[in-house]
Length: 609
Ligand code: ADP
Image (tube, rainbow, N blue to C red; front, top):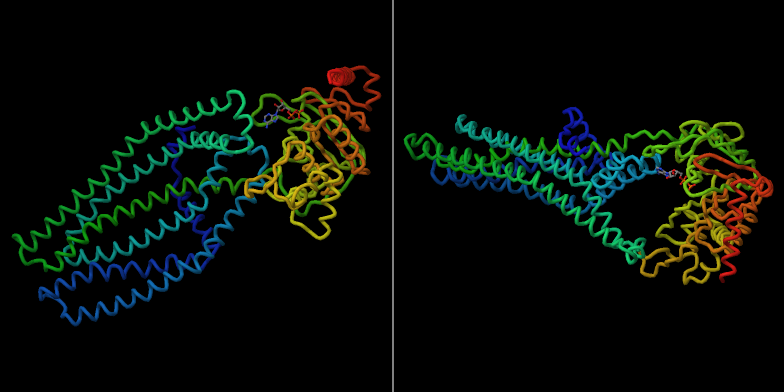
């Protein structure tokens, strides 16, 4: 993998198109910004030449009596200097005032594009390490790279303009001088070689950087604070940190020496070969045997310009090398943005509405897994039915829910709504059918109200949120908070933010289901953090609040399955028993055995208490 990265070089066409892609992001974000960026450079480069090299030559030739009169020199300074002041003032104003707004606009537009894509890609992408790698790199780099491309192009325009003017002047003085200027081009290739090494070094270090960032997070995020203080978790993290250091040191040994060599060759090679050679030649023409064939002004131009010309030539080569480096990074961004999700929104597809759901012969294997997590599941949920899905950990219950929501699509089989495949409905309306609480639900650093609604607030939402919190059992707790439903959860952004217990958090996430008022409710272990009494109460509330709606609930406590219209018991990705609680108990199979075992455990528990 590392080897592949190192050798990676994109074809010229792709390099060009990637850089144009970056420029287009700025152009589409703010045309005036784009225009000003280069307009200023196009004017500034010649002005700079006229006010330095050309002016010095004029002054020296005037002083030595071989050129303009003093009055002519002053007139020149007055006109060119005046033009420069006007342009500098205007550009300064632009860069300090209007450009700030334009800049924000460009960045916002670009980030929005990426974030939108991030919500469109399937969950399966997050399980594909190479996709995830590109995704993280794209997110990290995108804005800075776009500006880097702008800046490289700016540099190229500046350099090419100055180079043309300086070369023209040198050429008119003595065409032979151009030879000295062209030599450093070779050095540009050395520099390019250095950059390829550097890129390889950076890329090879990314996996270690990710490990380092992970370790860092485990030390500062409150999520990990408890585990960190228990057992030997922190030792393990520290040893991971030591691994990162070793990996980085190895990389430094592997790439650092080559990189240093390229820098030394570039820096010193250029100085010695060209600048000193050209200086000796023009001194010889002015003062030595060829005395008098060059004016003092021309000699000064050579002394100052030849180094600049050589430098500028190598800069041009370097600019192209930079474009090729930017292109490698932008490739990640484009790969991510061009990715075509297989589960997509078709706005012309029909809207889904409440009905009978049939899960038919569903097979599914995760990309990175060896065996199927679902191996031919059949389940029916009629409108308004309450279904319990039970089974040991790893039997495939959550996977089934993910497929039901079309977070993944099955390898075989299908989910039908009133006899029509889920894939035929509009995706957003399909997902909108379901109100879900996931086992690994997440609360966001926002107010309780926002966390329950998970959308912008509308009129009448206060009552809706209160009712939802009451139904989920979170209302009493929220009522004790200083700012009620407007209290901010977590202390991420607010020192007064509220940290809730896991049971309370679960109730808030459950309230989302009630507030969404979806016709189909899916609860994946919503009661795992609750005690049996609170769980019972929650289920009672839930049944009351979901009257008329279809419900699938997953619980490891079979006591809740008693409340269901039908129970499906899963094992190894398949349904092994189904029926009402009573019929399954009568059957005396695995469900009955597990139910009795759990009931005994509770009794034991009660005795112990
Ligand atoms: P349950 O919800 O019944 O505990 P899951 O649906 O979470 O079971 O898991 C079913 C099987 O699929 C398990 O063997 C689990 O290890 C595997 N699995 C779950 N998620 C992934 C994943 N993202 N990648 C690979 N395997 C997974």
